Length: 321
Image (tube, rainbow, N blue to C red; front, side, top):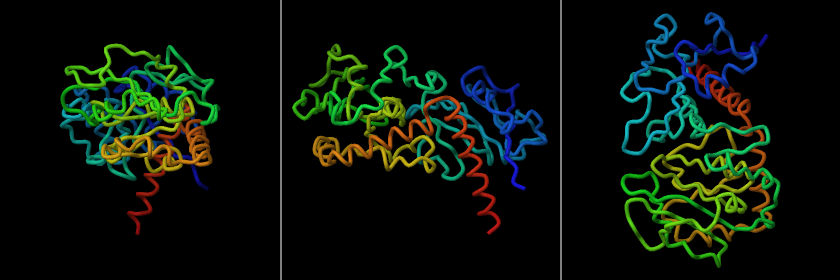
């Protein structure tokens, strides 16, 4: 008889933000309050002072079958991770804004960026820092050919060390003849294409076939989830730096487009190379991915659980070969 693996959460070592609340709401079918019944153990970190091995010396066992939820959105060149300098042993990570340099496939789980700061508005609500006040749920089912814009981006280019150099997008500013609308403020410098103020609203630019999703100071982009929530096709920039949320468990290749910085000058040609049928297929795939995996807190939490169980079972199979 196959039993459902259960997890135990160290409540006394977690903090009052989204993940403990979401994990507390999971059905008792998946969660236990008795550590002796647990298949794996979860601890949520949000400050560097919380040391992994203090959670329970009795259960720790070098981190085996432990999941550490690290919700810090680590910036390039900075040590913002709650786990910086700590020995996590064999523990698995649920991590946002990880890099492929440290991400362990079939062991760690990449979670969406920003979940320690912005709640999901599900089941029919919107993602993101801007969209909390400007929801555009009416866009999700709008076909690509009926959208107002072809591709859009609104954001800030930052001075200093960044994951993706957004100034590469500045030459595209003003090329609205291609249906591409880029609005960029520049912080710490001035270059041609920089704007002092935005002429569009963010909610208006969400009505687009494609939404550009470059990283900034973090390798991951908030705009990936924002694009999915409004039925747009995300254009992920520098995917080779960071895994997508639930990498290996979600069919991102059916939905998103990946481009590198060398592709930016050819962006219009790349996007226009997709015919209407291909656009519709990607739009439909993005909508399915959002509704299956990211639409509300329960789906995100259960996806993290399912990915972890799959990793544990896969490791068990591999270790017995």
